[in-house]
Length: 392
Image 1 (cartoon, rainbow, N blue to C red):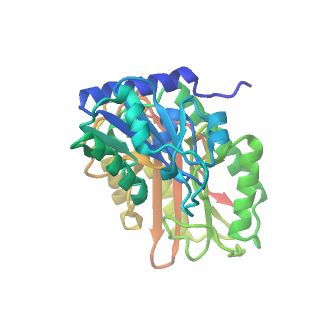
Image 2 (cartoon, rainbow, N blue to C red):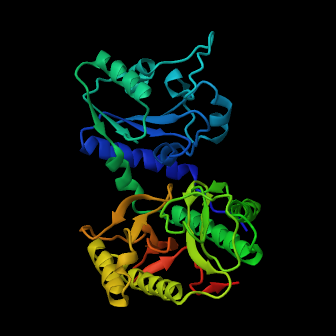
Image 3 (tube, rainbow, N blue to C red):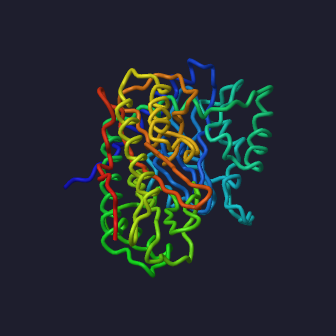
């Protein structure tokens, strides 16, 4: 089977589409910043995912993009980047701040001066504005002073406008990621046993995922057994699964940059009725949400269906948030679907239907989560995982 991949031509079109938005919004230059944990903006334009160091894609209103990397990563970047013009800058080095004596490195001022024929700048946007380190921001700010009075603005929404609706190639990559996640979930369910620690269970899922072809986890996967399971975001512990535990399983594979996620609970021994009722309520809400995820519908209607369902089955007080967040190059990306959301859904927007339910009294909780595509009549699941009471 030929594996799906984003073609070079699509990266060229992404840059051109970003430039069209820049011209429309009077943005003279855009830096798409990325780091090891959150590479999404830079990877969207370059397919480069830094390790240790940071990176950025610099784009003017006209001309080709430039990939900015740290001093150590040239051979790595040249092997992976879809952008051939790569520059090494100290501003993008790793946080331990090596000085690289004797190395000839460019500065932000050098690159800005050469970009698009040395044009003047009035508005400079940064996508990944909340991610960029202070030291790099200060260097950019100082370099821009050489061009006069330049305003630095947030550029996240500009690129997110392009990223929100996925292409057919992106959808194919996300389906493949979903298939890898489902394989890892199957393997984990088949091999998990009482006495294993949460970290050992993570090892099961990780091994299966990488053997199947994942490039990485979509996020640091977690598995919570018994007390402490009401943590909405967590990490696996050296805590052993006991014979009557209720366990949260949260698995996500990344493939070609694109994330997927499956969350399900599992019962060991005789299940307690209140937990069985809660899981069934979660599955009921999942169906209500998916029925509202169709093109043209208001995102607010999705949230209303979710909360109405949970009010009806008596589990509203188990909820923390919801019911969906967008997904793609990050497992969690904008826009969210919340009770105050008023935007219209478009076909091929992609979301995680993400139902977290927690009981603060018993400290038990779980997620029911799947990656889906907005279709014409409802959600199209990209993880295709069964919703049942998993018991051992």
